[in-house]
Structure formats: C-alpha cells, structure tokens
Length: 255
Image 1 (spheres, rainbow, N blue to C red):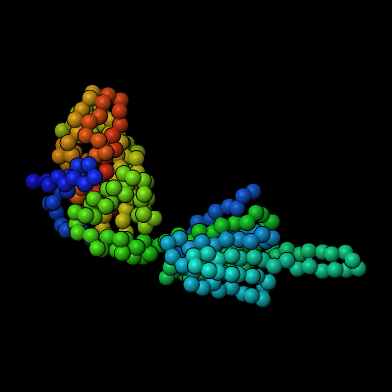
Image 2 (spheres, rainbow, N blue to C red):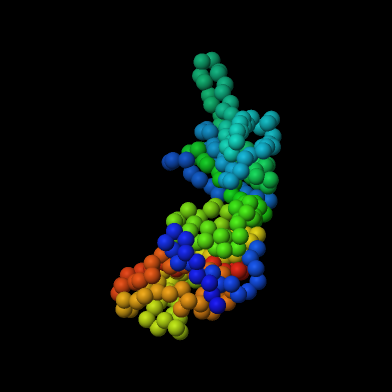
C-alpha cells in the first residue's frame, strides 16, 4: 500500500514497492575528455569557468605568446599582441595561429583547440561530465534516507532550484491520458536524470476538463513509469482550465 508523507504542506506519496534507491562576451559550453574546437578573441581577455569545481591547472605552449592566469574556478586567457615601431610608425600584429590548451577542472581534463579570431571576448564554461555529476549527486544524496531523498528532490524541482548535477533530457512531446482519470490530461514539462543514483524525475503539467480533486494514488499508472518512487502535486484541487504541477520520481532513467 503506498505510504503518503507530508512535508511543508505538500502531500508526497512514496511508492514503497520495488528495489531500494541508488558583441557582449559570448558563452561556449564544453565537455571533458574530448577535444573542443573553439574561437577565442585575439585582442580581449577570454574567461574560462569551471562549473562546480576549481581549475587545478592549465597547460599550453607559452612560446606562442599567450598569457594565462587562474584562481579558484576561473582562468583568463590572453593572446599577446606583438608591437613594432618602424621610424615612428607603430604596428600591432594579432595572433592568428591556433593553440591547444589542456585545462584540469574538477578532476577532469578539457582539451581545447582554440583559434584566435577578431571577435569579442569569449567565456568558456567547462561543464561537468557524467563522472563529475555522479560524484556530486553522491555527495548530495548519500546522507539522506530513502524517503528524505524523494522529498528533497521533489522540493528542488517545485522550487525551481534544481542542482546543476541533475542532467536535463528531452521531455516526451505528447499528451498523456490516464485510465483512472478520464477528464485529466498530462504533458511533460521537463525531465531530469540523476547520474550515479539511478533516478529520473519528470515534471508534468496537469489540466482538467472539470473541477477535480487530485489524489496521488490515482496517478500510479504505467504511463508515468512502472518504477515510480514518489508522486507529488503542488495543489490538490484544480479548476476548469487551471494547471497543477505533478512531480514524479522514478527508480530508473526512463519510464
């Protein structure tokens, strides 16, 4: 029998069956362990940001005329300008030769093949890979008991403060009808996977043809997944034309 729990005024239904739980600066997002071909400004200072960690090291060919500084989660890359003065006529020559950078960030290596170009300063964001996301999720969820995980994950989605270690994936672009609720239609707004924990989350928008009282137990349906762990509404009554939010937590990556 499903066991409802209540936290902060929200009714959370924990499904106990199943296996236990496991011209401005432009921005460029890159992933670890694969060479990313990028363009950097050859006249302005470019910014590198390690998301979720610190930049431990930056390796590059200093003889190419490159200046790099780093501190904490940030690094700055500047292609040096070569100036000559010929009889009072000053000439500036900007870098055009591509350079390779190997950035160590949060335990991973990000190889960058950078082409210096006459463009505005760039911001390069080093995104966490699967191993980094799994490690962050383990740190986040390990201290929690099973039901506490369901509550914490659900509240994070309802309050729009989803951790960066939760991976967004494409939602299912079709309406869902449930046999037990013929006047109800669901559409998936967003889907997230929690690497390393064997969990996935969906946020559904729920609309009703007539005013309806909502009960999580009526939504235990294979259309939402056969391995549901928790179901939560942001409201328990929905009027005609109104929309409620339903958060489904599953013990797998896909329903």
